[in-house]
Length: 345
Ligand code: AMP
Ligand code: MG
Image (cartoon, rainbow, N blue to C red; front, side, top):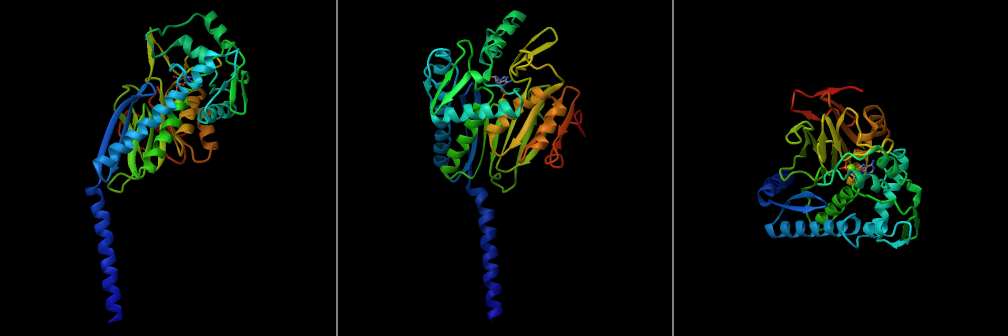
């Protein structure tokens, strides 16, 4: 009798578990919103219990992203970065705690990447103006001159005040702020009770939880040749995946592609055989910085750096259609385009 009773209870429990896990996907609805933020088309998808909950969560996430943009944009008048640049060589600026955090991450990564990632490249970035109507190939003299004003030690921090000591230096957080914004948007979604979703800010993606059917998100790796379509995908749960590619913002002159990732050593857009670098990490801020920096480093140095860092995986695609994947991701990456080949390094 006792045995029978426990079997009944166990059966009921299993049935309940089955009902719960079977029901959940049907009850959850997919809500998506696209908005132009941080100079890119943002996409947020969430699975939520009601359309209302999903819409509200997404709205709050975009509000948070705009709030970050209003602090860290170089072009929005009155932003912390706008004021820092405006008062360069002149006055110190009291910046928000968050701007300070992102600046400090930038400084930290300058050391880790031996200067390849440099938030003090603003003058050079403005000179090239890649992605703007005014983009052009500057003269060697202009580049040499702009490069004189990229010395990161001219950024001086005292508590919450910052000053750029060099009047001609400009800070640009374009290689790091989007990642930070993705992390913060995910925090907002979580606080709104969302456990499944996807945030994409122009190639800075975070896969929150599992898909509604309980399986991992399969995040596509863009085909760098076409700038659209995918060459494969990776299964991800609660991970950031950020890609930097030379197809994102660029102009062509003759056969040369002038793109938005600037090599601080030359002052020119990096010219190597890399087409894209994808970084998988827990935080998008780290992936954002590393994808940009490793694009500059190239395959050997870049893969060595990825392998040396904990909880960081990476995928590099070259112009020869070779794919290099770090040890922790090699087994799970699915390549769907047979023109691309996985190579050992
Ligand atoms: P991403 O799209 O994340 O690869 O970042 C590219 C953006 O970062 C550019 O549009 C610039 O605003 C900025 N950037 C370009 N080169 C560098 C660099 N070497 N270090 C730091 N930021 C950079
Ligand atoms: Mg980046």
